[in-house]
Length: 284
Image (cartoon, rainbow, N blue to C red; front, side, top):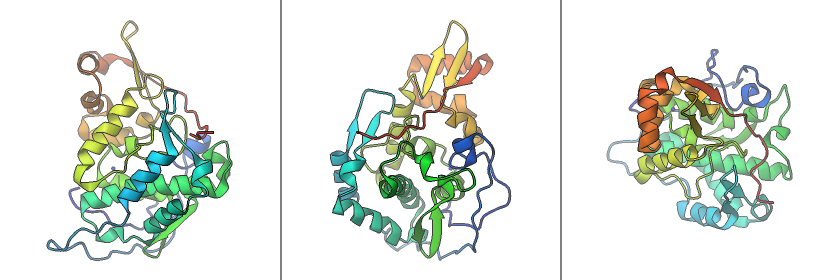
């Protein structure tokens, strides 16, 4: 979620457990159907400067103006009503669609696609607002995660495609703390953009903010030797395998006391998962 930049690939027949398909929407394993040929533009030359496809200053201003940190389960709420009439938001979304991410270096590409996922998710909500949940936009046979949300470099792109065929293949499991599908049980939406030059710190902050919540991140019941986690860690357990598994991977983002417990008791603890609340992360 490879040490090299991943280009937008052709769809494969075999699929992993998917968050943005039937699995998240209806509780069964889906097939993410994406047709078309992969295109493989040349990699960014070593002496060619990285491109900045999105105006991150503008994005930061929009996040500051139209989102709010809240003490409830969602963590960050979005004022969709005010964003819906914002010409600056329309300009930002247009920048995402006009970008050429295949020419970016790896960290630039990773930051671009994280920001793109979050921007295009919000833009999809705005297109259909008001809705109670992002899942209302899709149906059983046409889940929202497989709907086209942009055409980028000539290819139709869905949220599912961004997550599974691009971001997860960049071998960075912390993306699961960074991409937000507009729902209450998602990790809290970061109120600042992800930037290539501070990406590691940005992803670390996202993981910590998510795992700080004992209601949707992690809750440890020491008396009963039980750990309750976000179901995202269940759906994408394989993405953390290269980091020693989920419990080992998350020790870097919890308190020192919790980290020690997870290292010593965690391997024999019972694992449970929170229920997932799909209610929209709306401010109003």
